[in-house]
View 1 (cartoon, rainbow, N blue to C red):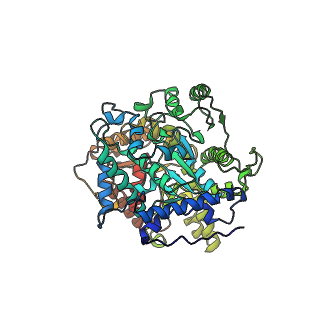
View 2: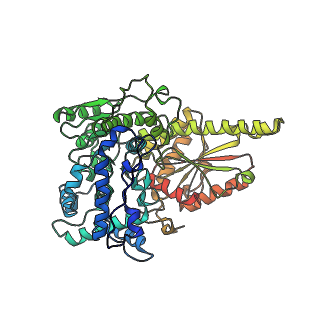
View 3: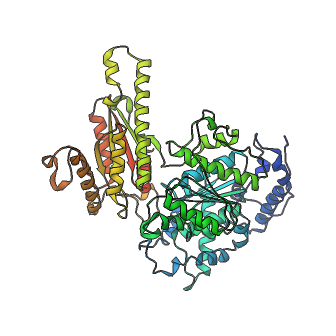
Length: 585
């Protein structure tokens, strides 16, 4: 094992503590305990890189220029970012800013052309599972000692979640520096022919700037929408591409058949660049194979990981569907390690155990809002029962089914654990056992919203029927509007508590679909429906999310101390993010 240290030459300038926070300490200097000798060849260039950053700071031309001074600078940045959000539908092609070729103009304006050509990118598209695949991939490479940059979308609470450096959200200080550098430069250089980039394009450009300035070894990019015309597709020569499970979503933009959707996703394929995918519906797979053949892409289909390959470890992201995403990540990371890291990775079979770094990476991966379990931190469970939120941003029929399966197994597992814990810790009396006998002491509640472009007649039956097949039945369904708005990027402090003028017509549409499912199964009749359909024994529409959360908390306090309320929050990642803001201290 090597130890490395050096003392930079003294300079007449003083380096600020803010700059020192920005320094990208090369991975070779950090030398993790598992760092392997094949990386040592790059040590000298990493040292030169750090010296270059110090010299840049001495000259005052470091990429992340000094941020605006003032307590409101982060709010100012969010306001500036919000100004880039268009008020029209994403399917509307009437605006000049939608021209994909503009992305390359922006890269030129930001002097990022050379940087992006050198970036060692893993590019992932798909309908569902692409964010999880990216999180798994990043975690594996980080556990090999490489410096990683991860760009995902959407964010749930803070826009900085979209940019991870070495597995951690970018700091506010760094975000502001890079944000204003990009924003001000584009403001100065754009014009009528090359207008300011739209919201997501700006975020992708910002990711390129951050990853270039921070000199990441690997940049893992999740496609925002589609693939062919996505801003992340400005990368012309990625190391490897991945396509996760495909299904029906964003059909108003990508097309109304799986073949058309697959064609858009395959737009990330590049000449001669290897690619991996998972088993797909026949129509989609045919298109992927055709596109791969046209570009001389070696497209390989992977199968889910097995328990043996993980040597008994659990994945960091819960749910049976994650074993397929994890296997896709293993192939992407393995290809990157062999091509860029110059590491020998053992050939992976269904019976071989993965290398230690792979297993640790998969076991420690994290991504908010995907099969996430969070207790309400404002409830005292010892005195008032439990209120636990099961959060998953599923919003397509296929992902809704996977979410329902995960939720069903999760609540059954949690209930059995709770029952066992009370049997071990307490009271041998039968009354105690009855109190915590599992399902009888639990109520499953659905908290739901989805965008109006989705089809609730597809989403809700998939959810309800799959849960019912596993013996889980919702006591009540709550329908709410999202708190966060699509035309403004904000923080928890910006969220309105209640808006009496809010339009609830969409929520009543969702409720009507749900009530139709209940009644078709012999549930309560029309006499149980409340005034204007707002309330019934089976469902309720609330004017705001805080009102729904208050109702849940009140229900917990009014219930027996033995009752556990298990709330599935799904249908929208925006809704999941809003709930997280309200239940965490």
